[in-house]
Image (tube, rainbow, N blue to C red; front, top):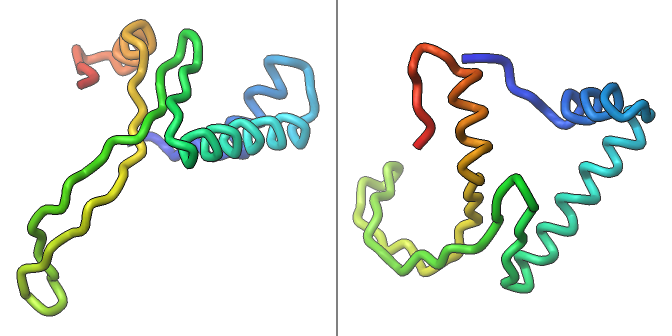
Length: 104
């Protein structure tokens, strides 16, 4: 598997493509995710045009296993952050993966 692409990498690539300073792009990326987090905390969906949608998925309480105590537990109801990519983004990733690999 390829190296992780972290915030510095993303900001650097954005800076190169837009002709901006990497620190400026790092602030922009951080700001974007702060806005997304605030919207999700207000239980709003965030649709990014030509990219995808961030939203909350409610998980009902369900049984789980505590590996330390080896006992059955109840995992309480909670939310999970979900991102659904637009189909053309998935297609672009599949093209770059090669070897006929698919994105599900």
